[in-house]
Image (cartoon, rainbow, N blue to C red; front, side):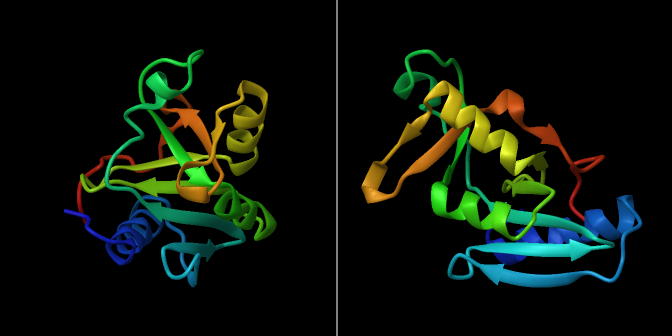
Length: 140
């Protein structure tokens, strides 16, 4: 079971090496150690650990349905400025999902899924925008 960003990074590292045959990985922790940029063979992956999906997505945003995912705008801006090809979200189950950072930003702006809980602005997307990144979802 994945329980922290460090476990999430280990999970992504295993997927990159074992399922995608990528090597020469470099790691850069950011957002006060809560996220990690992994660079492998000229590809960049911005890794986040999430305990659960944004379950009230469809309730908070009137024009949306179901569950979603959210990210602080500052973290999304960081992923984009660092040149991330994908944001990878790892859940306790070990499943890894991906989304293109610019697609996340574009959706939130165009669908007005922006809010500011606890003083931090977030951009949200429906879970249907997330695509499985790992082949099997099994723990390595």
